[in-house]
Amino acid sequence: MGTKENIEYIKQELSNEEKLLESVIKLEKFYKKYKKVLIGAFLILALFAVGYMGYEWKKERDLQASNQAFEKLLINPEDKEALQTLKSTNPKLYKLYLYHKAMQSKDAKLFERLASSDDPILSDLAKYHLAVIRKERKALEKYAMQQEALLKEMALLDDGYMLIKDGQIGRARSDLTTVPKESPAYPYALLLKHYGAKVGK
Image 1 (cartoon, rainbow, N blue to C red):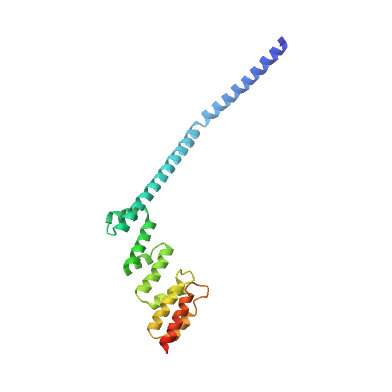
Image 2 (image 1 turned 135 degrees about the vertical axis):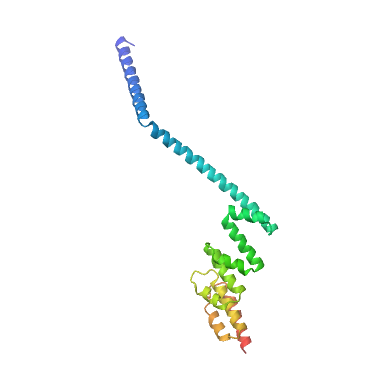
């Protein structure tokens, strides 16, 4: 390499170092200017990450505690501590357990409580079972009239059966005719209509 080439090389290296130094100075100025903002953003990000991990840990812990409490209640329904744990750690599973308990014991008061629940599915099911347990035809009719009722056809069957028992065969057959053919309850509606015809003779 000649002297001229060496000088050009050194100039280029100095220019590169100068640009690097200039970038470092700009970065340092930027950091000094926005130091508080950058530290604040970092702290917020760190707090968010810690909070999220803490939330996920608590959620997992509550899920395990509620599952254990649910298992204990299935073995021993009188376990008050498990019931309280389930209620505080998993309100949805707690309501489902109450529904299970109401189904087993046919407890009208418990169904009444669930009927006013904020869970639309449990509330719907509880209203149906409450009307069946109390043998309230008007409540069954009202339930069956609801477009979104989950057990609409079952309510029609129960109502039809009660009408047959009360000797109102014509009305029972008329109501049972409203059970759609594609419904799983349709064969039972046909049986009840046939039963009603035999009773009516």
